[in-house]
Amino acid sequence: MDARFFEVLHLIHSRLRHLPHPWVLTGSLGMALQGMPVAVHDIDLQTDRAGAYTIADRLVAFITQPVHERISERLRSHFGRLEIRGIQVEIMGDIQKWVDGAWEPPVDIARYRRWVDYKGLRLPVLDLAYEYQAYLKLGRQAKAAQIRAWLEAHGSPLSLP
Image (tube, rainbow, N blue to C red):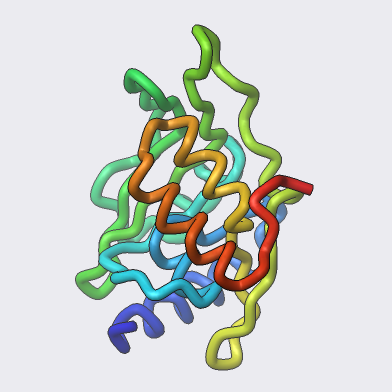
């Protein structure tokens, strides 16, 4: 992982360490922090609705797109973008997936949060089994297959607790 990512992670960690809302690192960075060999190009922060706006407040100097409700064909969330030291950071709060003609309830971040230690930082990440299931629901078969192969190779369960 590029050294700039650690600098940005350190800054994010220091600003969010005592956040009163659950949050996790997700996407390629969350996967890499859990040991998956993936290229990391940005940082994805997932939280609840209130957490998205609180994170934006704590990192206001870096906002490039304010947090707002965003709805696409398959996802809706409270979404915003930051740029910290040249690294793109996305904030996503209360993510809901469109499945079988209805919006699923937002994910319970605290339920699927796992902790990893990285260079002296204790960082929250989204459980890979949950990520696997989410990518399947979104129709992102290639990414789901990549996660599945890694979980199987490491003897980790594919199902959710």
